[in-house]
Image (cartoon, rainbow, N blue to C red):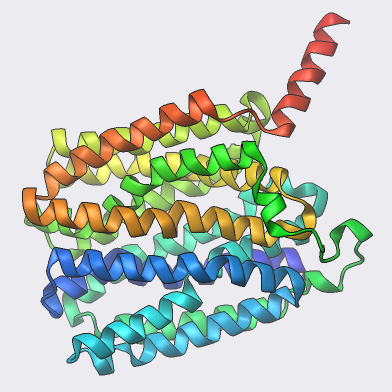
Length: 396
């Protein structure tokens, strides 16, 4: 099987595993283990802190070593740590230790696969969305199915199912060998300090803007299960919501390259992040289970365009030999660092003022981040080159 097909399968299985766990895990902690919003927020933040510290390391090791082998090792260990988690459910401390250890290995899976995919695609990296859509398809499939499964037989099947699918993903990844392809000198590991790469002002401004958007949005997304619980509906509604989000993403990942080619990376990024803040405010204005599920289409539209635009913008701002490191830093800022700050703040707001106030404040902050990206982040190098080409064609 070709590497391109294996990349699609890797995305599909990796996100299938995440789809059967991520939408429901906080509900498991709250309903099965009896954890409070503050404890859940603390666990989320500690996990994000460990991911924050480990993601750049994973990225650099992946860039310097065999990328497929590093990713496969992380997948296998994450699968094993998940399998033993329910055995420690009776001990808050032991369960937390195992869960946090899992975060160290699972937290960098997505950016490492992004880096491998960009290596495989090479000059055709603008087609990234057509491979990433299989991740959304896999996430939609399992989140739609497993919400009902957990209602019928409980959350115990979550851990076994995650183990099986993640192990399948591990074997698929082992078949992808981007490191065996011929490489130019520019693609080889660099002795340039990472500090010099991160000192790039456009990259710094971009990361600040993404943090301001994703800090409230990612945290609120983690608490979506409790939002539905506050509306008095069962766990299957959470699965429907996340499943619909991923279903919407699938065709839009295909459309993203054309939209970016027409309008540019930055305009697409601004529009997509604006949908994140708008969706949270609408959740508060219209607290209905049916409307809440429909509103997830805004998240799906926003995320598909956000993912493609942000991945390609960062890839354009770092040298090729730092490709996976760049994606790891992007994930660190948009999910890990954002999760640390947002998890604590939103968790405290949830306990002190309720889920609706937490979502309202999160929506305002996310829109503030969108404004920062619009006003402070420069256009990507590709956008600037595209504009120059258009100006030349118009003048001629």
